[in-house]
Length: 618
Image (cartoon, rainbow, N blue to C red):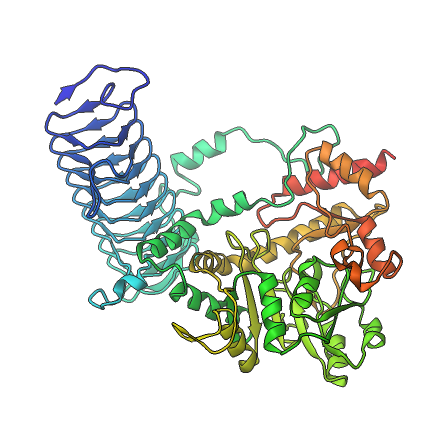
């Protein structure tokens, strides 16, 4: 082998050990102390690409043994080790300190985490995800399609997801679209055709649960007896303070943290997006139909339709119900303008009714006084993640033969008496704006309903009124949900129940830490399952409190500072200040504290301590 002298700061061969027989293609960035042995090829262009088209990244201290082939577009993290005769296909990422055994094939578009050990002669199929600290035994095979000879096999590619710390014994087979939960153990020779729960032990053909990892014991048990456990026991620890003091170091706490959420799902999201790009499936397709079916099932409704935004969802349902010029729709002034915007877009008139002071939701006791001969529908908003009083609202609607259109833009997974949005009214309309409990990576919305006629009409209107590719039965709109957003939402929907549970836990912690202060907290109520899209308190010193929290690094928000009846865009409705005093009072006092599922106890306690400090210093 040729040994070249180091040349600091270069991405070329200097400071690396590269055999004379190795081939390094253009656009390959080599880290420090890389070793590439005889007859290796690095940066090899895949079909349809030219040498140098795709960047290839080889991290510091990587070793690639003889006769290995690394395609272009691969990223190998620092400290990786590829044994002899390994092939890594394009667009695959392997994290730091991972190793791949001899004669192993890792196909394209795989994501391998940090400190992963893949033993000899394994076959890792396209779109497989292996998270950190996993161990994959010799001759393990993962699959990504059930019927590889099918002419549409590429439309169904979905590799397994192997979560953190999983151990898979030799000769095991892992079926497509299976998830093996964190810390699980798969016995040698098993055929895994169904997902495996966290820390389960499975074995057999087909694999069945035979116990849990917690029940495993050996002389070098990772929990009690190993050198790893001894090292952990000797590591310094920091005692946690349950209630931070005012003097503690300042902390930055965002109102919401989509970056933290992404870290928990990025591998699944990137693979989902890669599948769409690889298959040129950008409009419609199975990702959309699968999300619609899954979301309908989640909401307990017969139908779900993906559309371009929450605003579009409201407008499409109004049009599906033939609500338009000369009609009136009763709704709330304490909401985002999209609610009234959709009503005016179809030519109808929004008729405002004031809200309940305790919840900010439409007050059923005031609805009947607002009903006229032109009233066609009631549009309650499920504000902040709490359902409106749908039992009473629907009773009024039935009495007066009115339609009910639920604005559920903030209520993904909320329920009243076990019934979610869409199970009460004629239809419910969702926004999947990025910051929502279930948010896309751009604009998107949805309609759920048990009414087949509404579903059929919305499906027609959202896609230019088309019945065939170039035949339109009615004038419609370009209001479809694009496939990429559907794919992202499909990944997130699988975690929504868990995220909502985390939000409830955070709300309960706030309630405990903030008790006794001169503020109004959102209180739970019998029959309501709230999902806390935002955690909103009321304070008569709102502006001073907000300024104080901002200076302490705590972000806050106001939902919403200007009621709809005072919006310049709706001045033609003729309302003035004082028309809806409860809504106006809320607008002056409400303040949203940080709320997101990944929010740790330290941040919750820090925010609460700063609110308490503000009031105790006054």
